[in-house]
Length: 526
Ligand code: XMP
Image 1 (spheres, rainbow, N blue to C red):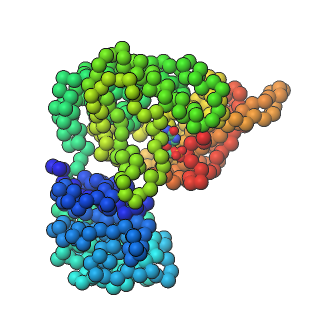
Image 2: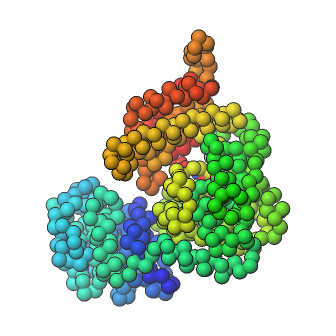
Image 3: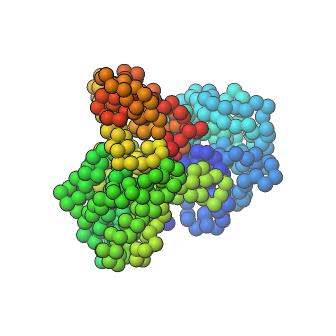
């Protein structure tokens, strides 16, 4: 591996991806592997450093996730976090015990900032704790370099051996100095130079793609979403006219979206993608007629996509490569073969086309986190409104319409959603203006949309009786899309949205605001 790499060893902690993202933010490349990975394989990757994540086990219990003592004598610096720190002590001859009280939440922390791990960190700071077990006796050669009221060894080091342990979670935002600590480890202690940059990524990958593809033909399914757009533009930069992009308009896109995607990626736009738009709206509505079960709808939409795509591919003839916009969380969430549970089964329904003749798949974004994909998008000059667009599910509005999908219902939800997004954007702009052009309002949702419930009720509009649908507005704040809270959009904004929807969208006489968090709910309504 040429790239300077830090290996994150996963012991099943809920924050494993977050650890990796923080390391990447220090401009250091890292990859996540299960703790079951063979030590020789890790050696062969020549890592500059190793980080052990947290995990749900107790290291002294039989059958707990463990590691070989040799991991600590490879001459590579190791940092253990939470369970990783305890395990390091346990394996090297220290002692870990169950505490009487669990330490959980934001906790005051005192650090010895003459330790390299804490260089530049104020002596008194705070951290995020979440543990039952604690390090009750240090392994030989270690000393404590941080304490909290209940934790005499909140961080430990054996500097000569390059071994470090932190009981708390530096990777979460509730540890304000956490990123500095991780920076100290990967940049100063491991000596990584910080060469992981997205401009370099673009340059290297353009070269690599050119070499791989040669004069072959490449086919890409473009949805207009961030990942496939960035993948397509990267490919186009590398191989130009050898790339063909197929965009399937399934009639379940947001209002005007099909035309917007075409305006950017089509023949009139700034890119040269051999763009083919397939207007398959009617076909989808026919297939979806009478179907109200969400999983069935997802399946139909996914399968139909493959069929349409295959038909187009057939017209193009034999291709050599198929592009997929897979990103690193997809890889990690598909399971590392270790302890980390597959938290959610894969959303990308449909799978791969069976009847397209191709040699190989290219996944140019396979090692990137979402924020890195966005940076690559910006490097490639893709417009901000596409790079920073909200996540949108593959089955589109199909799962934002509860019950049967019809063309009329799609129109209702498109119009309501358009008004909602317009008013939220207006209110956010207003807030920004008042704040001197800085940042986003604290209530700004990370994902928000209107959905159509299957509920109808009697109402009065003008002097007429109505029997119309209720629209649900959803807005969530989330960082990882695995947990989410309802966003508290100001009431006057909601009032405005409600009154515009009722007045402007025919077929709606009621608007509801959905407060469900995730879990127990999900982000989408269905
Ligand atoms: P959930 O529903 O799991 O959503 O709370 C988490 C994120 O995934 C998106 N999502 C989907 N994406 N196909 C997709 O491609 C789907 O079937 C699907 N369902 C949910 C959702 O929009 C959110 O961003």
